[in-house]
Length: 141
Image 1 (tube, rainbow, N blue to C red):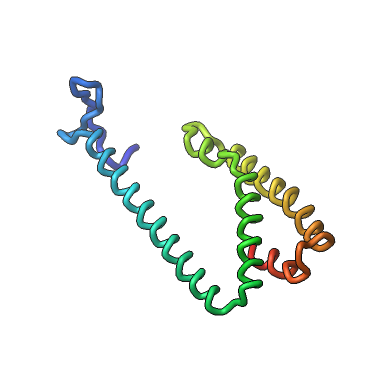
Image 2 (spheres, one colour):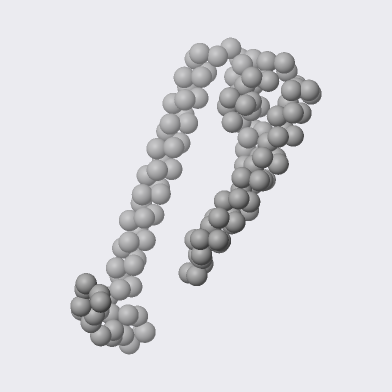
């Protein structure tokens, strides 16, 4: 038994659902606008945090050490691109996703991460560009 009384569903001339005189498409548009504004705000905060941390690192590190951080960031970015399959996005878009689907995507991401990172860290220990990069890469990633 629903707690909220059910009202009959009405449609406007364009086929949009209207309940109790509220246009659902404008409500959806406003919710999308608010969501987009939050995403822009979080991206802006992320960029500002990155700039501040880069400025702090530039002040504290030697030029050679700053180069190692740039190298670490490059390798990490390449590995992140490798792992961007879009499975999470596809899962969110599915209306009939089950717990098994979520578990499968999570398991795949863990196995992929271990598969990519294990040889990477082994290769880093044996064939490092710089011996000083060995402790930087695992800590930075």
